[in-house]
Length: 365
Image 1 (cartoon, helix red, strand yellow):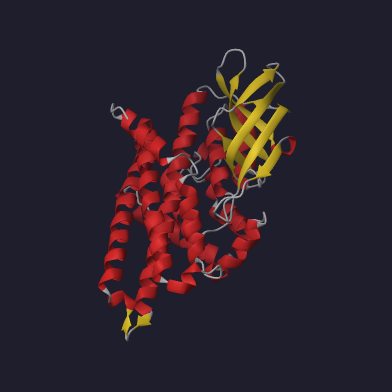
Image 2 (image 1 turned 90 degrees about the horizontal axis):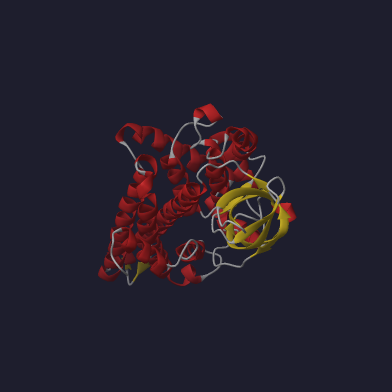
């Protein structure tokens, strides 16, 4: 569990317990393979989504109380994403949280119009911060044209919030588009429970949002998305490690439990070390998001690199530790492996993240 400050330790433990218990009651982990098969066909877990939104209020946690939210922080969001990542649940939380982040950065009128339905789950959102479309039309009736790759949770979304560049001035701005007016093409990825799509806009009607500093909001959304994916990867790594250790203590070979073999112990110890390092960097990124937002881009890049490394290693060793059953589609080990590999390249290539970190420290790649 990710903990940001000593005074909030108990509250976040309680939050983690509530989310874990609620999720297990609604969607038992014993049925995760069947739900993943449904998710691969385009379905998502509406029952769990309802609990997370209605009972936990996940989409309003990081929203100020004056805007109707819980007044918590990114630290609480990271706790939830860590839990959901380890469970490999199919819920459009990441896209919804990104949409809330954009909406709460807008002017009062847009906040009042967008935040309540987004937080209540009545309006499901997704975001593209890639500035891959251009704006034309008139100031009062803008239209967007372009292709957005790898939009998270677009299939489940009602509204897309997109950062776009004005065709004449090149100035960036944020716009609201109804996904019903776009062409959403699902993409096949390794992760069966993650919805990723290509969204095509062809002179699509849009509404300009009142965002004073669009570039700063874009950077914040990118950093937040990386951070939450890093938290997911941390949850994946810890779940896979726990599953592997549990099985190694039970499975017997040659008259001994396999966990007593030196080779198995050393492999799992290496995974545990990588996971501890990942936790440190994810917690640092949480601190940056809350206390020093200017450091978030670099901190989130380091966090997602470390957490992905741990998740990829942990899920691979989990499959190996389980032997033959670990390679079968009937076992959940492959779902963790798929998520780890897919998240590893979801936001950026590793080399690009490394170059960004080096550049932030004045080092030429």
